[in-house]
View 1 (tube, rainbow, N blue to C red):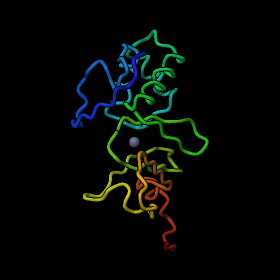
View 2: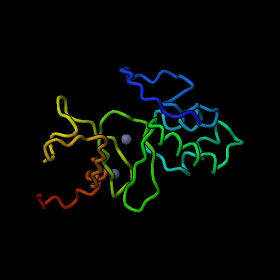
View 3: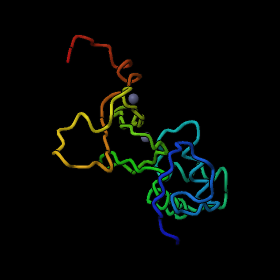
Length: 157
Ligand SMILES: [Zn+2]
Ligand SMILES: [Zn+2]
């Protein structure tokens, strides 16, 4: 396997090149990656990816899906999202964003930064530190779930 040459590409568009951060886009990896890029973008778990990938490539095995997810994560093409002890989920959104985990419907949502905010400003970082990666996961209830539980609306927090 060829190793990552650091290449600063300014484009945020994913040109469908067959090499991704030094990673060869094999047919299987492409299928797995496409599943994650699907319009749902619902941060599926590996087994959910597997079911969907089978729809595109019936011969793909769960082990292959795991392998693909791992190499795609390592190459930086996708991100692994861990919420508690739940199965890891996968996210193709490489823009700085946080994840919001709804403890009711167990969905994971992408939360974008407010305009002009940067991912590192809210933290009291020691001077001179350099953030290379930041993972923020919030948990709570999504608007849909707060809506359906709003029967007793006496409490304020
Ligand atoms: Zn995400
Ligand atoms: Zn919810």
